[in-house]
Length: 83
Image (cartoon, rainbow, N blue to C red):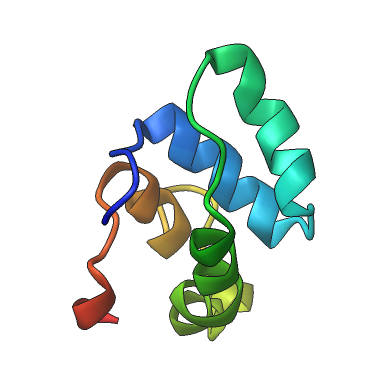
């Protein structure tokens, strides 16, 4: 059963937390004031192991002057099948 559909704000917190090396518990602490569901352990593991690995290659060449793949994924997350 899929988890809750996340807002761009929630995804930004989750993505930054995972990319910043935060634990799932630390990310949940950031989500808690928003009154939203905690991050599912399997979702956290998938983000760490699969989802971002397709975006990390070439991040050194990413521009911060316009949305890169990380920024785009906050508003329009790619389905797993498209990675």
